[in-house]
Image (cartoon, rainbow, N blue to C red; front, side, top):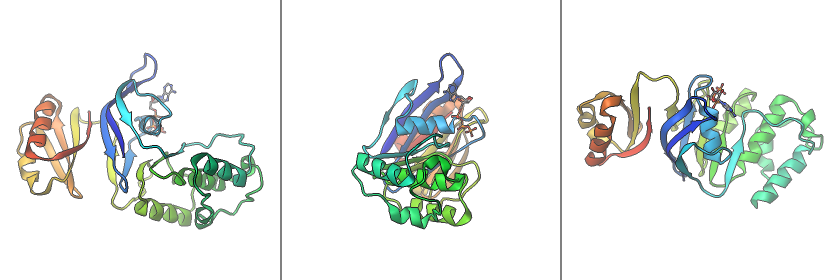
Length: 247
Ligand SMILES: Nc1ncnc2c1ncn2[C@@H]1O[C@H](COP(=O)(O)OP(=O)(O)OP(=O)(O)O)[C@@H](O)[C@H]1O
């Protein structure tokens, strides 16, 4: 699984883009990171995928990581076929031609990547990432896909045994996924809990809890910043497991 522990990030002396983000995604689980432009979604994903170092906090990730950037680097001279073969060889996995087909790729697999349409480039960029075994980190994977390919991708991610971390600001539904909203908050701290069960009323009653809503078998709890440490200690004492903490 991938685990981000109290991640903070600032670029140089600029403002903090991320502060104190704790998140774990287990195999077979999916998390959708949402938030407005500039809220830090891509930054969080780049850190999770190992492309950027956090300023504070720590990350642990599995070995086989697939990364799809928001924009495919221009000027790749390889053909789609050679590009996928190369990346499959590097990762020690077979090329997923079945996925290329399932996504409805209609470009020339032997033409340079730079000459493909946006949608077809996106499909190849996706397949190279989806070939990884343990962790799939996909930045805006639906962007540029036609409806049928979007449905194929959703079905693939929903049934994947890898840990899945995606960004989305178009409201694409990913059944069963947890949502991690980044960005403007009401000054509170949002704590995501796993396995809350019948404890939700007790969590809601803790001093400093502003709202507590069930999400699947867990809950999303908003806490006044001044009470966040006590609430965290209390929910752990109650036996809840903490998925993420965001201020
Ligand atoms: N390499 C960088 N150097 C300096 N600042 C950066 C860098 N990358 C991102 N930022 C800044 O960090 C903030 C968060 O950017 P990021 O791309 O993570 O947001 P985002 O939520 O993915 O945005 P969008 O939805 O617009 O893609 C922005 O203010 C951005 O300008």
